[in-house]
Length: 272
Image (cartoon, rainbow, N blue to C red; front, top):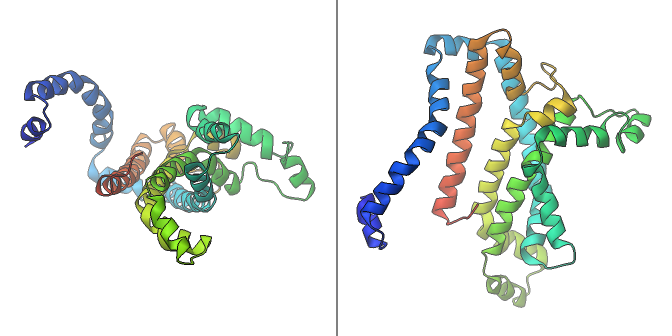
């Protein structure tokens, strides 16, 4: 089937075979560690480790914080995505670069930045501390770290969806008397929904895997700031089976989110 598809597209089967052979080493290299992880523990031992208090506690905290972080990314990110997709203004390129910055900056650096901004003696944190509000090394700090790292994935993917909408469709609605908000809720958002949903899933998956910024800004306190990645690090020092089991939970959740996002992207021709 793949060879027939290649022929229909004017590409030779020999090219396909050559590329497949030359790609195989890196593909195997990328796949092998995950296979090793899944094969490293017996199913019965895996079930016992997954049901351990540390694993359950970390899983519940991760679900709670990632859902909160993703929800905030969605509410705050959609206006930014629409702004970037629809308007040209001074500083647009700078804004786009700033949004991409958390992707390229090491997460531990992002954590230090958050600590210097919102920590007890930070730029904003010292004023909050004077009011009796401390953010650093709390569950709120976990959510903020996840928002900072995950928001670019939602914003960029949603912006691509907004850019793909034919503006004439919205113009027709405005000519018919629909206001800006009605056009957005009735036309723009439904048409961009596949991109928005895909971006939301990607943001959630990235928030789930966040480690460095969380460690620096929130610490590693079981039940309060210890998410799945941090629980893996802690368990690795004392109980390898538990570390492997928690790692597989994170892997399964991440794969599920990526498959769902890519399915949407393929079905609705979304680019991300």
